[in-house]
Amino acid sequence: MQVSTSGLTACAFVLAAGLVAAEEKEVISDMPDTRMQKILENHPGVSNIELLEKSEDAGQPYRFKIKTGEDSLLVVLFNKGENMQLYAGWRDTAVSLTRINEWNRDKRFSKAYVDKDGDPCIESDIDLTGGLTEENVHEWIRTYRRSLTSFQEHISK
Image 1 (cartoon, rainbow, N blue to C red):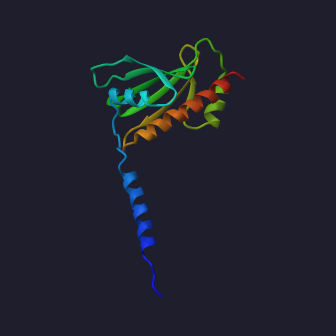
Image 2: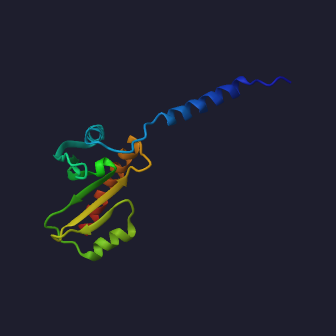
Image 3: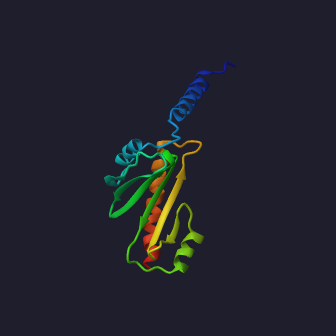
């Protein structure tokens, strides 16, 4: 009985090609403002990207204001782009601390609080230590946008 190895060779080739493709993704360990701007420009649903603050002091954050659908939010790069934050807040919207605590108890991937003016806010942080791919950053933004929608519904009840 003769065993054909051509099918096994083809399967091994396909699997190896998939591993090579996975290894080709660039790992990012810091996020310069120019790179973040490019990621935002390529993110579906993001528009009106505006760099609000750019400091030459390495310790100061860069702040982008972006529009996602009808929502405006901030993208903040801290520590020379080694940490990032997505932030949104609502002015003149009264929300009880009980509702805020319910959100933080029941939800993941974002945190909510009442700021010093009594306005509700929601944010999400990500650390680039150890590295991320651009797809990880896009997924972080998508997850935050879903949280933002849910949070708006949560505070309006």
